[in-house]
Amino acid sequence: MKIIHIDMDAFYASVEQRDDPALRGKPVVVGGDPRSRGVVATCSYEARRFGVHSAMSCAEAYRLCPSAIFVRPSMGRYVEVSRQIRDIFERVTDQVEPLSLDEAYLDVTENKLAMPLARDVAVWIRSAILAETGLTASAGVSSTKLVAKIASDIRKPDGLTVIPPSRAEAFLAPLPVRRLWGVGAATASKLKRLGYHTAADLARADPRALERHLGRFGPLLGRLARGDDPRRVTPERPPKSRGSETTLSVDVLDRQVVLRLIDDHASDVAEDLTRIRRAGRTITLKIRYADFETVTRSRSLPAPTHDARTISEIARALLDSTKAGERAVRLVGVSVSGFPDASLPEQLVLDFEAGQNRVGASEEAEGNS
Ligand SMILES: [Mg+2]
Image 1 (cartoon, protein in one colour):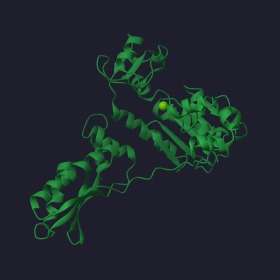
Image 2 (cartoon, protein in one colour):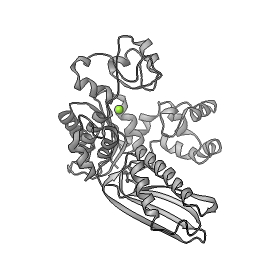
Image 3 (cartoon, helix red, strand yellow):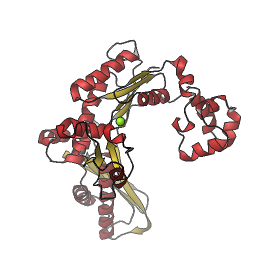
Image 4 (cartoon, helix red, strand yellow):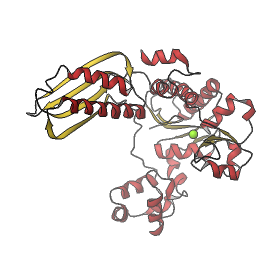
């Protein structure tokens, strides 16, 4: 297996510095106002030298680096760049597993560039990203996700690190257990108490002892520490629908009650769609009568929606073609399906920028087509 982990360098901050020359070479903190309770989303390498890092409070960042320039995140632009890098990845392979807007695993065992060496593929990707976005990315290349991800981090920024399978175990050996996949703060301190400090300690450990202490995860952790990671690159599969339903504790004959439930479910579904950054064209109402007979009624819109009002208006209208009110009802459900095949970024644009500036109306139209 040939796996590349790509990670953009100080992503949000780098986009800000690229787009505003006044920010270049300066400590930049992307996040909330330093007087607010916001946290640092990303900061530039110049700010990192002062000890600022992501997830710390903006107030703390300000204390460490009063000269820092605080910038509010503009997701629309980050999404735009994310779409560009995603497009580059897809010129290489369909085996792309995004971890966030700026990070992904690629399985390049077979690749569209027909390059036998994963290192060459990583070089190609990094230069395509630089040429097309003006930004740098770091890459880790190895035969496993675990090693590729750790490798991408060690020569940041603008780094490329290749760890051949034969060197994976030695590469991991000195690392603290916390760096291994699946080891959080609690597991790390438990392992420390048991005398396991580094990956080498775990690699040497008796798998049965690890199983006693950590259950089924124990032996897997031992394998990971030896550079043996069974996890495959899993291309994301977009969800097909999103729904919300309730089974009532008593059967309901009152149509008004059913209508109120429809409104509640419509807003739950809308919220859920916003969270997963999707919109769908088909709205379905599901009604189960007291005798368990279940009917569904659907209507499709010309354009996808994730709007609670729209969803509920249509679901309410669909109720007219059921026997609710004449027959008692025991379950009410609302769902939205028919998501466009469009890639994630277009859906993101729908949510973050709906009708706004930079990303513009043409993108919206695309997302809606
Ligand atoms: Mg990054």
